Length: 404
Image (cartoon, rainbow, N blue to C red; front, side):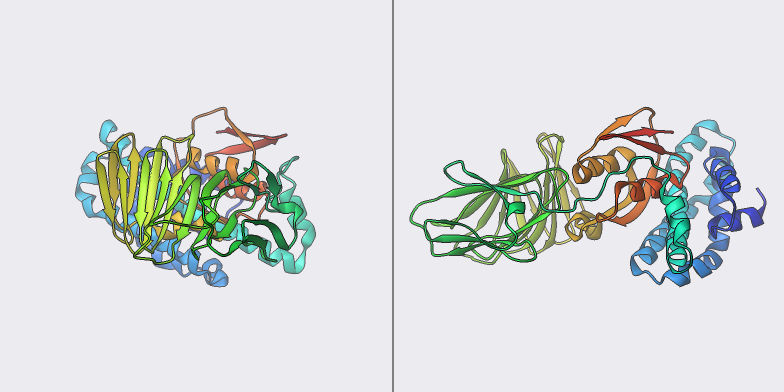
């Protein structure tokens, strides 16, 4: 492959036909060693390109840095790489390791070009944007409202999108109030008995934020629910969840806070953490951002410190250090953030946010990098992923078809 053609690709200066040809060459296993060395030699020029400097985007810079680090780590075994280029089995293994950053680089750089295209055309020629966005005959809008509901102790169900602002309901001296930003707050005096409510956020809804009676904040992702007492009495504060929730627990040494999901228990005194516990998935993940938590399941126990994550599958605890916290909590900031994720992981998020069904026609054995607002229509995310030319999509009614 000619060096000038590679440079045009990574600076997003080639035609669609050239781009497709170069992507095929990049993904060929026999070219892995050449690709890595070329990117290492030319990184500074690519990194200082006009496209990147035009965007001045801190988040994009972080993605570029992560790719660069992977490249540098990969070059630590150059001598082994040279000797194994002609060995088929080792080349396949090497290809699997290399694929992550090669595809990631392609996606990020092409995503930069797309962003630049949008910005320039918004200023000069809006008709071009319409042509670009008309690729999909159908599209799915981003969630436009919060479709959450509260089930009261007696079974009455209140749909929160029917209430713009103000008092939602009063229960035993406890008022439930919705403010103009959608925050649900439980305000009042402590009750004599435990009275439970369940707040649910369906697929296709914006996330929901709630202020519990003890001053703790909880964010709920789409497809999630939390059951909690309207006021906490006794010596503990206990809630149960299904789905994904982010907690900022108010400190109270005399009343520890417990989050449960089936037989899993997370104990905290006052801290910030994320729990991903969808019933349809086999693994529960607890990630700590601030403070300390104790995670229990059966006889197993794990104490987390900030930056750690424990993944629990069956009765096995798998601890990870130095987790990408921005990626874990991107949903809370209403962002999609994928960094080396496979297509199945990405499309699970798509199903939750857009309330669609994903159908796979082919197996896509690649990893992707992308970051985009959850306020964008589904086609925006799909088009970014398609820029790699290793995956393609169709939207047919409520179905998203995934193919090579």
